[in-house]
Length: 116
Image 1 (cartoon, rainbow, N blue to C red):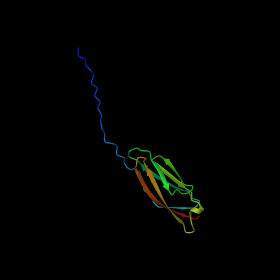
Image 2: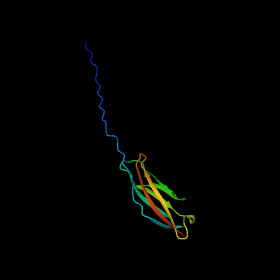
Image 3: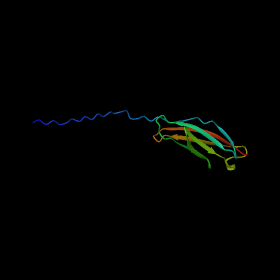
Image 4: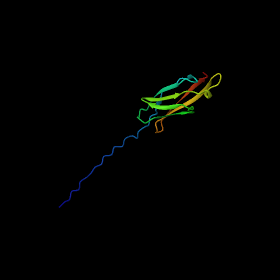
């Protein structure tokens, strides 16, 4: 009697390892704000891979916040008197968008804070 053993074939498809694409962050124009006013920067941020995005700002001014909103981020700031001088004070801030997989986009913004 001849024994028949089942043959199991395993088909392995070797796909190309996923290539991570850089996230994109909308350009940011220079801003002007007076002490006592609110500055709101709403920026569009995208990642074609669908990665979770994180936005940071350096240096993040005291009192400034970054909030994730649909399609991007919202940065709000109400400068204090200590954030300006008699002729205004320039703050250069770098916004950095990361997808958590090595993809990074970065934008610099110049914000001039004037006294009241």
